[in-house]
Length: 178
Image 1 (tube, rainbow, N blue to C red):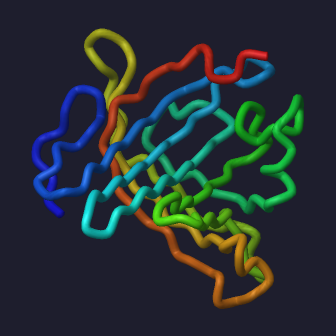
Image 2 (cartoon, helix red, strand yellow; image 1 turned 90 degrees about the vertical axis):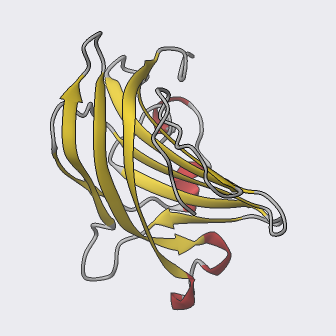
């Protein structure tokens, strides 16, 4: 798969039958502070349809280039999607999730440290460039260890997820309105 020059909304121009898309955004947490989220999506059409998403979430804003640790997240935390326990609208720490939605049945894997290291991975912002009309454009890479939910207690369910990105940084004000 090759990628042409990027469009203004952060979507890469596909050269093959795959359509990658990168979005980075700030969203208001329940305490009204800004959290950061990277959403990396790949949709591949026939003959083998695939739909995959990666979420990398930081509880605070990204204001410059730097390295951010990714912590573990377990399935019980994701199941708590209400109030102060909601990891999406009120992230208490950095986390990441990989989801393979198609082909069905889907598979997902949560960032997962090892017995000797609780850090599951890193999000590295290599460039942060303020936009002329506000906002910013960022680039970087991520890598994290994740444990598949269907093999959660099996060492064979461990995955290494990695990627690179260049995208505008946007603000979404209605993501977590209570």
